[in-house]
Length: 278
Image 1 (cartoon, rainbow, N blue to C red):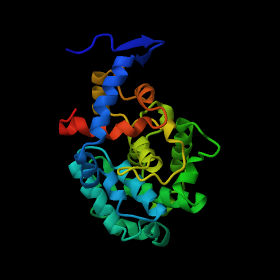
Image 2: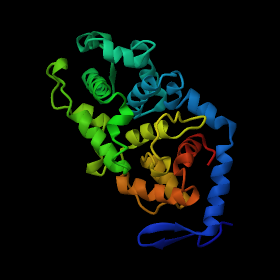
Image 3: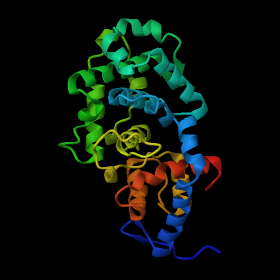
Image 4: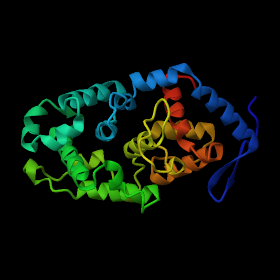
């Protein structure tokens, strides 16, 4: 029988009771120890692709491309991401910095993934190239040293990506496809894929690469309908939807479990539900 009154409500935010905290700690900590978890991450999840690289810039570039295209079925988009990076050679960052955008059209003439055209992909590549040329790394373009708030830092980064000079690619239309890859936080989007990218970069364990210095306690969970559904069943939130506010609400609950590293439970929650362990 499930224990009663495992959570209470205070000022609209879930306040986990001691019984609920103990239950979730036991359940999720056991999942963290499951041997299949890391194996699944490396072999099936897009984060596994990042482990093919050692140079931080290559990890950043491969991570941004992988995260932006991580929509739809994992079994479909991961091979596509892998093919993109294979096309860019052993060093994706060298490909961006040393090749002319005029050759990208031919190199990626094969590319099309659901809503994303090769021109959307090339906009992402060109903006990333310009960011690295300007700031040295993608990390520095977030401005974490002066913008400690993750929402503001991500907004600043997306603004910079949007405001690049895309003229080397020729006429590219209204940019909607490119902006779909990088939704803006100010529009209350949960920004699942960008939050996932930042998680990869800031946390370090057998799954996440952790090459950035931003405080991992301030990260926000990459939220989609699947995570929202599981989080409601676990009592981490009572809210529905995939907005930034809901993502913050779930993250606040996870901070009650682990204040210093709330997203340690993100990957287990997501994939345990998929595989049927939760």
